Image (cartoon, rainbow, N blue to C red):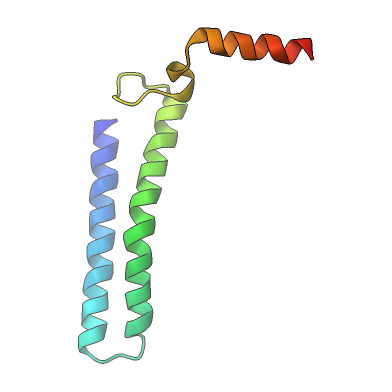
Length: 92
């Protein structure tokens, strides 16, 4: 899991660096698309880290890796709450 996180982080860094460099080059050359590149860099600054986090979170949920510091939702709930919810649903 750590290797996947490192690879995703490196890809995210490279993607953001490329977008920032393209934005700076377009701004310095007074290109008419420089404002669109600036908007894209702001968008990527927010979206790329969120997507990387979401991919790793879903990967952890699918793999069931409980060795990590964050537990899945079912592991956080005490079993008495889960059992009482199931019993209340079956009575209705």
